[in-house]
Length: 152
Image 1 (cartoon, one colour):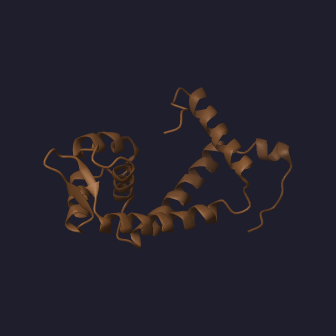
Image 2 (cartoon, one colour):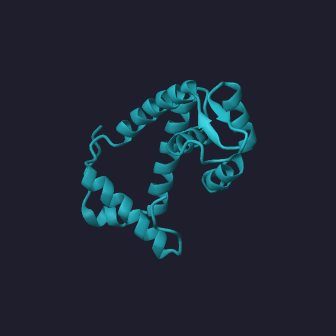
């Protein structure tokens, strides 16, 4: 997709709040749509990713504490864990730690592929250096306003 070129001064005068909110809304909507094709929500996706990344170390309580700050929909994470368990994707050991089943890993990989398609779409025409500079600029703005500019 081609977008119209504008002078740097005009671009520098643009409201960052508008463009960052518009970007976030569209990216989140595209990711949620892709996940919905697997009948997943973002909290399902976050759960699958964290459990796959550290099998047998997360409990429901610890994972809920970790994921809640990212959740904008007041998700009942118990429902998410129960749903993944009912699908046969998530196992909970006697000590409460979580692991993915082979079916859960297959589902996670399918969802990963769907998300990767969204990432490819929104990164069209943006090289790694430009993308990294954009992220670094946003991190700096967050830190300048008193937020946590470190990577999650």
